[in-house]
Amino acid sequence: MECYKCKAPLGPEDTCPKCGVNVKMHKKLIAVSNAYYNIALERAKVRDLSGAVQALQASLQYYKANIHARNLLGLIYYEIGETVSALSEWVLSKNYREKDNAADRYLSDVQSNPALLNTINQTIKKYNQALVYCRQDSMDLAAIQLKKILSTNPKLVKAHQLLALLYIREQKYDLARKSLRAAERIDRRNTTTMRYLAEIDEQVGAREEKGKRHRKKENKVKYNTGNDTIIQPTNLRDNSGWMMILNILVGLVIGVTATYFLIVPSIRQNLQKDVNAAVSDASDEIASKNQEIQDLEGQVSKYKKNAKDSKEDSEESKSRLDSYSKLLTAFQSYQQDGVDAAKEALAQIDAGQLDAQAKKVYDSMQTDVTAKFLQSTYDEGYSEYRKGNYAKSVELFQKVVDADDTYHNGDAVYYLAQSCRNTQDYVKAVELYQKVIDEYPNTDKAQNAKNYLQQLQPMVGDSQQQENGGTQAGTQQPAGGTQ
Image (tube, rainbow, N blue to C red; front, side, top):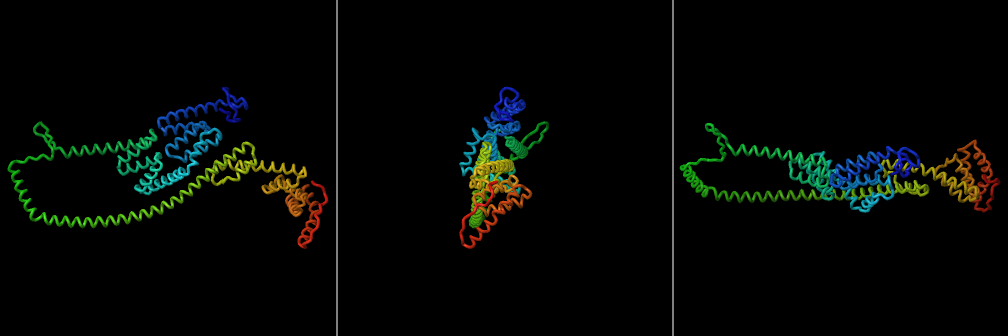
């Protein structure tokens, strides 16, 4: 356990041994956070993943730097198919602790598997498309999308639940129950799953009860004889002997008549019906095949487009993860006071790939690193200038001027001009002296710049005339000492 202020190890006392701040409440918050973490761990062992998520979120509310709770939350999100949420938790975990963190291994396993990244992107897009189909009342298309999702990512609980909801709407309760049982095997105590199952049981029970009442009403007839109630089946018939004989005779007559007048025409009619049905079936099959061909062509075009979008999304995901990794490297160099390394790392980051929180960290580091870089480069250039290493001081002061030409109230420009004069780069020195005179008038360095400018202008003019005329002359050092 560390002090929240100075990061020093804490003992049993209620105050920090290093900075003296009161850490009693800090210890209590960590203890409550660990208690919720232990509750979540027990729930996760019995696959009560929804309850574990609630406990872990409570744990992180009390102590957001609880690395074990954050890593476990990421693992649970990954288990229920929500990989993007899992990656977010692991990246946050790395921000709180860079070394000896299991999140490094989890992120590495995901980043090193391009197929998995592609599957994640496709799952998200298809699930969102299924939601769009549901809003458009295209339930068949939504069910197809959800089945495709579950074929590649069978652990996505939300997809199982949405598919079950579609089945319930169509009164396909057996299929809905099957989908919900698959979700229950992943997360046993999910309240949404349990609510849907209760709804199915209620609907199925109501249907069975209604069917039983209907069958009872149809199959039985009640009537009273005196004080007795008699229940008699509706299909009971009381045929006497002469009725049986009459029925037999009528049946024989009908049979003979049907033989001579109905059988042959019926056979012909049936054959004609069979031919017509065969022709109709063939026409329907041809139309169905044509429609299937059109659908397949549309699917091919769609898959080609999806493949292109998936490639772009995969490249974007890789670029985003690379930006976060480089930001962590820059932050580590920044903490170790490596100004040059931090500046170089920051220059390689694409700030457009960062979210708002990471962008804020990036901007803060960029401002601080730039200030430290300018200060250290200016001090080093001035030191080289004092030593007489003018070529080196030109290089260093030029870096400062390129970054901020107003740095140190124009001293960087002035000393760059001095260094150029001492390296006999008179043309550049004249330009820089003139810049000092124009931008910082009524200062000592502006007065010195005027003196040096008067000395250098004739030499610069002679040098330009010699270049234009094709003549050569020796370079003359102007009068005046180095300031």
